[in-house]
Image (cartoon, rainbow, N blue to C red; front, top):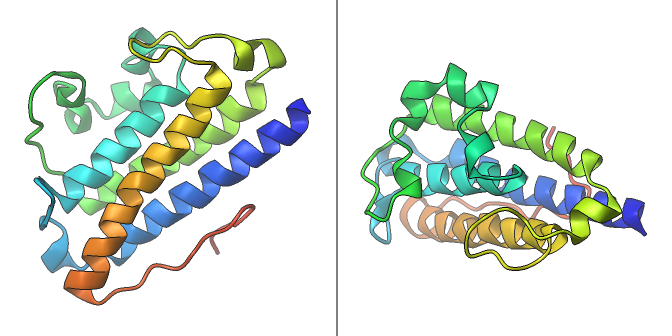
Length: 172
């Protein structure tokens, strides 16, 4: 059962991240800083990746110490996403695309390393009082929630359609 769970979670992360990545790639330059609700498109994309990355890790303390974060300190700035205030940063497309690659690699590594014990344990994050297995589902739902917001804006404002990515999908 463990292998089945890990395969399905990896497939669903990949489908969700393919959807988000396609939104990022297909967003016209004119819409990159357009508002999605109260935040610009670029900030919504960053926020989605930021928390995907965050919840893939074991805890907040290890989050900032990742080599990708240390190597891209300017990109992460003061980690305003972790503060109880409105974020204000905007992000360029190449940096966001690079962050997608990091998150995809992290998904592959983290999901492969999960065990029955790690998946049944409670994660070390405030306000997340469920198992690590459920945290993966929660994380995928969060990616899809924001990808749906981006898709809607792209359809309405740019007349751009985003395809459906199913289980086991791999981008060409």
